[in-house]
Image (cartoon, rainbow, N blue to C red; front, side, top):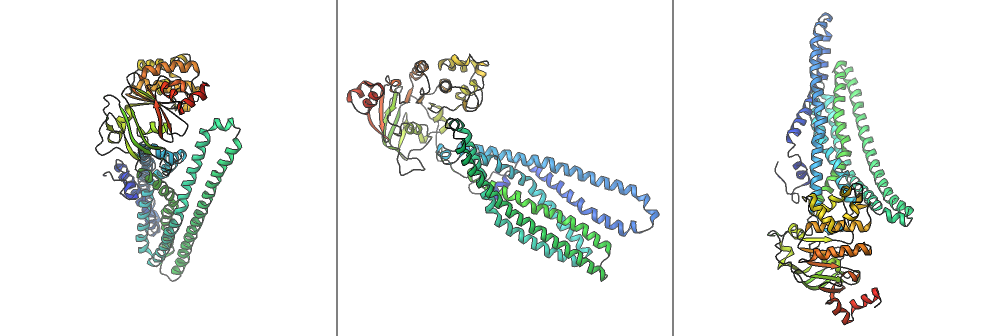
Length: 586
């Protein structure tokens, strides 16, 4: 099966594309389902033939045939056992493989998205699409074709056989089937919105839970457990209301289907009795008819009961495809080439930028800033002045609205994102450590690093000072988000990553903000060594950390208001001098 264009293809075509690679299992599953349906259809016909033939004849001829009859039935139901096992086991494996592939495609889509996408969407909702939604899709992928094939074969087969037994009763069944089918289409159309809302509500619960667990330390610190309980209860109640509406719709649907099935049985029994009274059919024919009704209604009820799974799967798949069809805000140009860093010169040329959710509130206004190769430039200024945003635009976490950013004369939008970000080392104020060991977190900067390289990077960032005192050294688990380490320890591990990565350009966003004075002095010396020969942008509120920068740039309202060395700016007695006096009282 060829690869489909997700953005242009229909939902059904996209769904079918996930059977690629599983077609052998899919075909085998359908063949086994077909065999099961054939065997189920054969038994009432065999029983009818026996009751009207062998069992109605000479009793002395029955016993010699029973052994052969038993062997035939055992063989038939052994085959049914094998086919049923295949459908249950390998059918579910097929669905699980499709689910796994969808999950990987969804995760890959998340990884392609820009930072702005995650600014707009809640983590809990994104997790819900990856877990809850995909499970229902895999169930539909497996059970849907199976139920439909078995149902179609057994219903059509039953109609053909019953039509030969009693055309009148078969016609009555056909009328009832049309009524049931019509109601099923109508009810499914009505329930679609309810199931779609239910998916949104459970995503809301997941988002609220993720938010509460991530901020549990703040909650404890403010004794705000009751507030979080109320917030979660609100999301939980909304989900409960949605689920209540879903079950109300499902209850009406199931009850109506049961009533229609009851009407079908009533028509068959009353109509069959009337036909027997008129001598049109025999009692044995009505008994056979009743067996086929059971055979007819069971797969039909399976299909109708499958409605709930189908509705959940449809709503989930629509949300899944919605992500796949979303184009990242930041994309490589069609002719993008790898970045070649020869010197490391950086140039911001008339850059303007506003965050996508607030386009009317520019954060960067006509910014012009040149950073010479190998020089260290510090950005200072009030919070919200655009310092962090200026640095975030360099590795293309966001794209500029106007102007351009150049590295060695190459527009960052004309090079591949991978090569651009490989050339930049970033240490942020908000340090994130992944669940794993200290060594694994350091190696994030260079996944194929050797143990010696990791140890050297750790030493340069002073990680060894605390890691080697732990029972497992660099193999110590840091916990989720580094919860087992102090803020200063996490900051040093983040710095070690950059040492190991050894990039051409550095961005240090309050890189030493969480360190004590002693640790700060040690790490500053290491950062100074790392910055030698590299172009470095430093963001700092503690002015003591950037006194030796080659140039200091003061930013306010997304613009450069002054620039120069530490001494130059003090002499000008401007914004920087005012901040300096506020911190040091000089």
